[in-house]
Image (cartoon, rainbow, N blue to C red; front, side, top):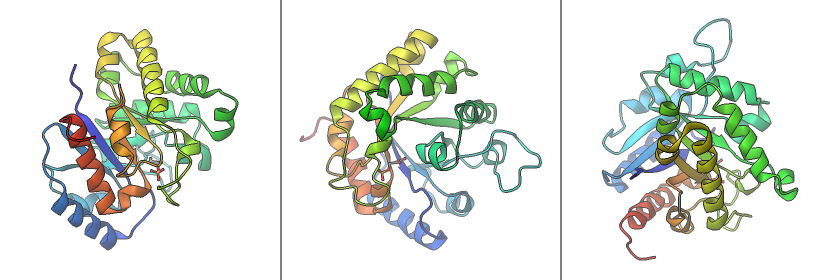
Length: 265
Ligand code: 13P
């Protein structure tokens, strides 16, 4: 089964609208339309509507970075998936920063995945181990538990549609220096993609396992992207810090094109 490559920018809580608009403008100048590569920009709620008027839909899709699981009600300050329905194709769900800094529980993440599907938004489910878990060699157990709990309420057909991003939390650059940060290797990414796909296959069957797209994220930049994109079972990357730099991010999309077509190394 041929899975389309997916490159996702996670802008996190960065840039005002004008800065985001300039970045989008620069990306649109540099990134070509590739029919076999999908490029997604996960931006602040505040930027979704105005940038939807500027974005070239042949090149990019918009994503939210989070949303609340109930559709409406007394939840001051929250935005629901039902509100995002017409605006975004994807949403990140369960990013480690949400889990760690905003105390999102396994149960919250499970409800968010279900709510995303209920409202026609495709979830990009983020999973990955913390540094202490990594040091205690608990990576697979943590990933297994996060995955099985997040997917409790979804069907095999839905799993086939969705995206799973493996992000080892200890390797995330936090926007500091995505060059030279402590980083996982492409072999680590490949091993985890295989592990995740096996788990999906045993619960949801072969079709779901062959269709679901698995991304690697954490300190990806234009120099190391190719090695991750070439790793078996990795269908794309989720990029934080380097996605704020148009030169870096267009370099990563270019690396995906070269990986797909076996150009250079
Ligand atoms: P960095 O690319 O800055 O390490 O961030 C990764 C990330 O958290 C993407 O969601």
